[in-house]
Length: 274
Image (tube, rainbow, N blue to C red):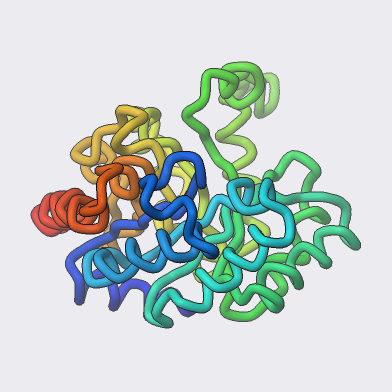
């Protein structure tokens, strides 16, 4: 998917909502758990009621990998079912030396036909370059995450510059600045956790044009208002992900209707910020 097509979808739907299909078979409504294809059936109904309200779907592959072959099959069927105008994200957090990354890229871009994949940057350019080499596919690099452990490395201060102009930057700032030079706003996005919204203004000074994938709104306590205020650029430049708040809005037989209501609340708020 091209950048312009994604921007057009955001403008047309007045939404930058990404629905996370992080489907845990133990949490879906009980009436579906005995279904022979329970995860796909659940995802199918969520997609049916949210597709006009969102522009993207994110699949956290761990929830599918844990089921073995059946899970991989459910993931493939889900990706195939998502309408073509939606941006699809494999939240796989891959990243390894070149040969391995090449196989990961082929697996998710060719075999599963995702539009994008999340990757970890800490092995350097040669671990990310194979993903960036695919035309009309996107590499989404972990920038600043919302978890407690972000303080262990991402928020470490390091010294930059020369003796006369020495400054102290966060490690995540250096990572984002460096990675941005490897790709372009047409094939590279960054993950920024919604609970780190106060850092978004600073991040925008480093990467003003790139899209940001922002998880953490909803159950994790991130503020859509703050994310939109500090993270939006002239093209919107945001994909805000909500997973549990939408897909587990109800554990009853009307779960799809409840999911639609929550998705509509997000879309309505987003329309007001665009």
